Length: 375
Image (cartoon, rainbow, N blue to C red; front, side):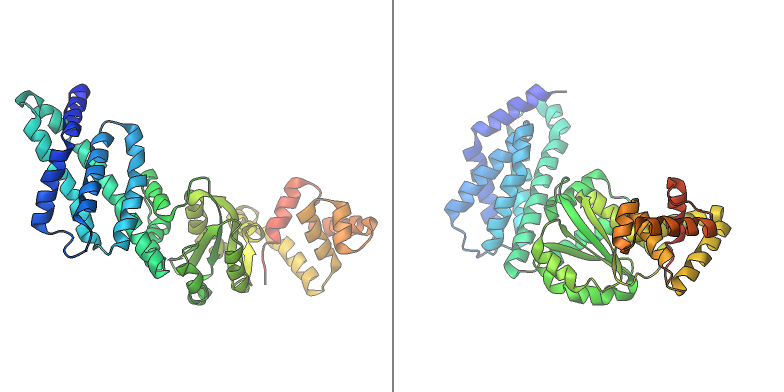
């Protein structure tokens, strides 16, 4: 309703931007928002012209709304470098609302007042969104200057991992802050609670660079970074001996969140890994725990048999493990350094003793579940 009348009011305001800028500068100087920042009056004036014009246009144009983030990031970076206090900067942005709203009330007729009331929320939303992006870019520039992103990222990472009710908008906000797009491929590691403090210390320097994101989750310690970052991978090599799990190539923050939040279930099912294990090596323990109530006795019998093979260092176990990983007699023979007939005979022996024919998919799955227990 009243969209055409609102657009007419905004058009009138845009025609009188110089006057609106003067109104802004008068109150800005009266309050003394930037203090002795040393920013030239000419820059404050030109910036006020840009920002006030953009905010007005963004209330009627989706295309202009898309420009809010771009302009806000540039503005926030610049003011951080100029040494403006962040609270004063945000106050200056919120002053825009007061100035614009007062001017619209002055030019609106009595008949137009319902139009203003109907659109006040839209104006407030546009300015609040602009202030959000300015604040985020300001904080990131401060962190970049100090070469330490830990403080700025910590609050958002804690929200990403720990919040039980993180909606789509919240996830989008965090994505903007961390500069992780929905299609970004990431690597995720979660360290076991027993090593969380050591992992934090080991990755502290890397975290300060802003290229790897690290945060406690419960009593564990999680880290993720963009796939293909060779420098970060060298830091991960240094902690490969730490017990934990690695989720390789997850896409976007929503998947990062799921991976980290699932780690407590994995640790509960698998126990403490001996080193940083790929999730594919430990996920069967989760299935084992879930299926124990149904196949408990069967799994225990198979596990007892495989433990006996393990204690005797029987080659049957290594052959079975290789086959379960490859699904190929030929590849298993190559990995086991033996003839294919030897592989076939060992698999037959395993079938006889365990009752599982691992060449049959459903039997192979149960064998993998049974073998997921570890010392």
